[in-house]
Image (tube, rainbow, N blue to C red; front, side):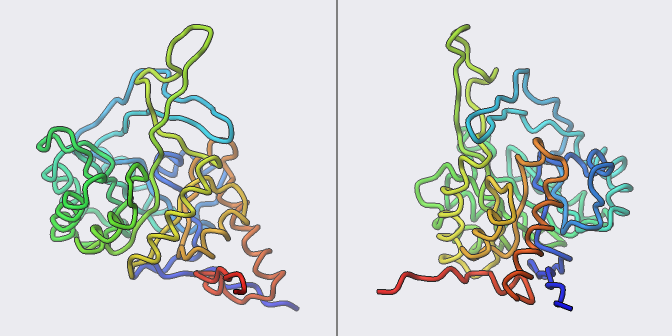
Length: 309
């Protein structure tokens, strides 16, 4: 009888049963997907972005399907940190998988406020810092497009955090490796690469933008080749682990990220098409390893082969 491959990985000191994680903003607070997915079977959940105060989000239309992807402009709608701790964490503590809380704010103080409140809440494994937010103190400059702001924010939040800190990088930059190094220098324990790409679409019949805010974030298979390159660049640039996120639909998609050096992957847009996408990727990954006689998923990490000569 062939040996069942070991899918366990260690990420920033956290042991995950497997490297397949549901991405923030695509899996709600876990409870919404519990009737489709046995949450104990996946590696973890990154919950919706959490802010100091509740946010109602942008006006519709907020979603638009594109060729091999989707544009969204949800506007970071969420219940706020107090309601999250009170109403959402009781379920998540019983989910049976690792729980990561995506944190955002428009100023360093807001990020710190959220993290300090979460520090007092049991059942959270790590924080994922969403740095694709405008810093109101710097004229609306997005934290994640400035290496200096990225390092400063990461450092200040890390100083207040009682848990590992994962920084989610924006792909809307010239040099993703520079931002990766800035986050590492600020004390990040891991990176998520990457968030969505700024995009837009127009209805030729109505002459109106497809999204109420005109622009939104592009995700899905269309961005996978670009993000895969970014993951590879970040792995080469830093020593901390990297989580690959962008257009993963199949196990083979995930394998590409592992070969590029990712320690774990997040499944995002695929959850909208198939709420069991995480389980399909997980099952396919196990079959992929078994077929090749690999004992552990870690045998794939960073093992992309170079062409001879």
